[in-house]
Length: 66
Image 1 (spheres, rainbow, N blue to C red):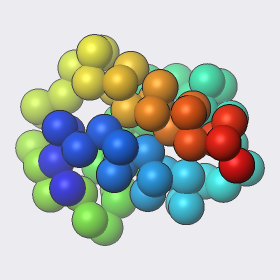
Image 2: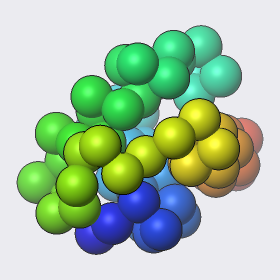
Image 3: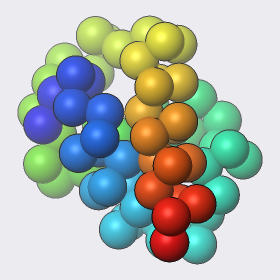
Image 4: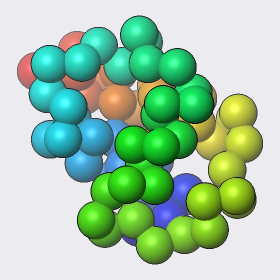
């Protein structure tokens, strides 16, 4: 899984943190959580605010659907 896989990352975060409202997560924490995912294999330094925001929005969509 890489930074480009926003939807896959969002689903993995949903599984890891099912009771967390994604909109309450700071980008610094979101970055740590993504990098800590077992399936994640990209360069931790390759993210930026736009990438993290996209992941957060995908996660929020999943959160609302559940």
